[in-house]
Amino acid sequence: MNKDDALRLILRNTQEVVKEDELRALLENERTPIAYTGYEPSGKIHMGHMLTVNKLLDLQKAGFKIIVLLADLHGYLNEKGSFDDVQRIAEMNRRAFIALGLDPEKTEFVKGSSFQLEPDYMLNILKLARDTTLNRAKRSMDEISRGMENPKVSQMIYPLMQAMDIARLNVDLAVGGIDQRKIHMLARENLPPLGFRAPTCLHTPILLGLDGEKMSSSQGNYISVDDDVNAIKKKIRGAFCPAKVIEDNPIIEIFRYHIFPRFERIVIERPEKYGGNLEIESIEELGRIFSKGELHPMDLKNAAASYLNEIIEPVRLKIGEVD
Ligand code: TYR
Image 1: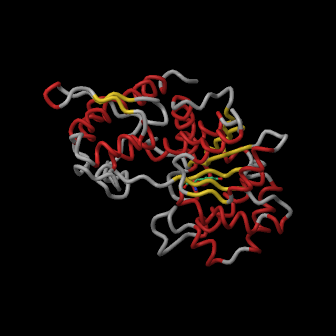
Image 2: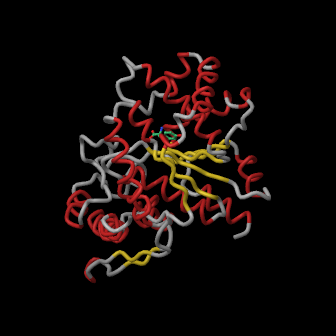
């Protein structure tokens, strides 16, 4: 792939890159650049996770080496379960990420606890603690942790460790949702005084839930990789999808972020009397047709459910198989 195509692929569906000239330089580099994303262990791998997984797949195609950090200790610090729980769930999550297409031959999976308790790493955390105000650490967690009215000290250590992971894993490009931005900016500023490189950062948008509200496990307003075909259909059928509106329409977002990156061309099946099947080659074309009212939300939803199932079904089956 030539550099321009690689850059275009990397920037597709992202919200922000800090900074584009640095990203360009990484592509020019002799050395294979390293990109990473970290995930707190989660009981359900869902469409939100899939968005950054899709981006890691793009980066892999563009020639990056990929590291996935299974951030078990971070989950522990952020009150996601006991230390045993988070380690166990991290292992399950590794299977789901592999099933989503991150080939274990080409992707390095690293558990946070495998290096974050080393003396050198911890000394660096303490150094970073001396350079970071409490206020900055707290603000960097605004969009990552609930309950920040009364944060624990552990949640102030969390962003320092995330920054230090970047240095320790020798990461060139830190990838995450836009909610990771403040921690990444802290890393860019506070790593260099300790003698480490400032990472380039790439942020994906945060997707809305199917009801058009924030995604939330308590609302069940998203699709996870273990949903079966009936659950997918039911959730999509109930989703918010106003006719002719493409902005903040969660079904259109599913096409943009999940379906078009995996299928070059899609077919929307419709009975002859409603115009027959529609072949669509890009999200732009879909947006034009839908906003003109030439495609009914129900037909769009049926197609979304069937393509999503096509993506998720093999994942569901594979999760049981991968070692
Ligand atoms: N902060 C990330 C999240 O919200 C998890 C993470 C942890 C990412 C450590 C990177 C990292 O080094 O899920």
